[in-house]
Image (cartoon, rainbow, N blue to C red; front, top):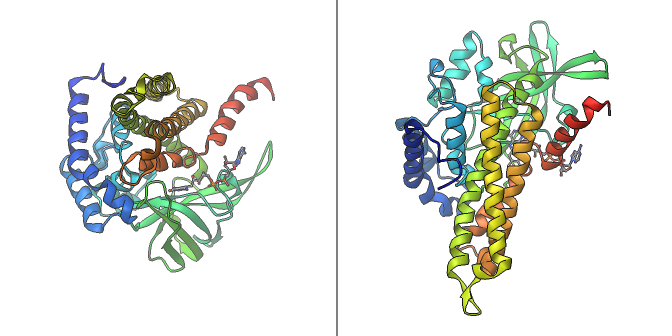
Length: 389
Ligand SMILES: Cc1cc2nc3c(=O)[nH]c(=O)nc-3n(C[C@H](O)[C@H](O)[C@H](O)COP(=O)(O)OP(=O)(O)OC[C@H]3O[C@@H](n4cnc5c(N)ncnc54)[C@H](O)[C@@H]3O)c2cc1C
């Protein structure tokens, strides 16, 4: 039994049973087809969407008072862990709308938040730009005020989702603030509808991780936005983005643990059954020790995720705590995937087996939601800053 399951109550066990049954029926059967085609056929995506609503998994992360599933963070960590076992291209059809939308006020609630909960609308989270990746503050998208309106210009790339969105949450500079450390961009989050004059969305580069999960390029050319299209407060966009990135990184960690568990299962079976020199290859220390390290890395990942959930519930989760989860789990699943290929030998690279797909999928985890280097930077700053360095 996996390390996170020994102390689950009946409700959590039921939830896991539902998620696993759903994945067995609706997601796993499509994995190979989606990876080889490089896209999720629309009818399959819509079927996942529909069935996930029927079993109560759609928008399960959002509170019940807005129509969501109202699941606890612990429950979400278990769900994300299960989803991590398969492709993002498939499980992203089970919407977990960004919690940023809870900042919607007045008409925005009916226009953006509720339709995302019911599945009538899909959103994108648009922060990254061609020249501003890790250095998010380097963003060039900007909006200037014209009387009560805002006029948005700029572009974004790598903005991902399962299908063509209905609107994007777009981060753009709306001025400069003087701070103790010098001038700092004021960044504001805007809700921008697809179809607004001057706003173009097109499919972007195709990733070899999670083939079929789409990235979009967004271009804004004098896009006129009303004051009611600001999400949260003007100039407070990064604070909003930070809130979402925080738990998002924990969910990435949970999902990496799920993927690692699946890969370890494959590696162990192969190590126990593939024979060379008259014995199972797992009996060679070079293979058996890999399995031991894999299991220990996974256990540590699960504990870090569980610890982050407890800290979040207690309101004491720091950025460095979150970075440790994201960093450890994403690097761990990459080591596990690479060692699994090694244990399979040549077969590990063959398209006929899923090992190479999981290895490709794992690679993205060290890059998105903040690269490993950025996570190390956050952790080291938390150590050095109190010392004045
Ligand atoms: C499939 C996919 C989906 C994505 N989805 C979204 C999305 O929905 N919304 C969104 O906004 N973004 C999204 N992203 C963007 C993602 O978050 C960025 O790719 C990531 O933050 C890294 O930025 P970059 O690719 O520009 O790399 P760069 O920032 O150019 O980094 C390149 C290398 O330089 C290193 N580096 C950079 N700065 C430092 C530093 N200070 N110290 C040490 N090393 C450093 C990095 O660690 C990395 O190794 C997605 C990306 C991909 C690939």
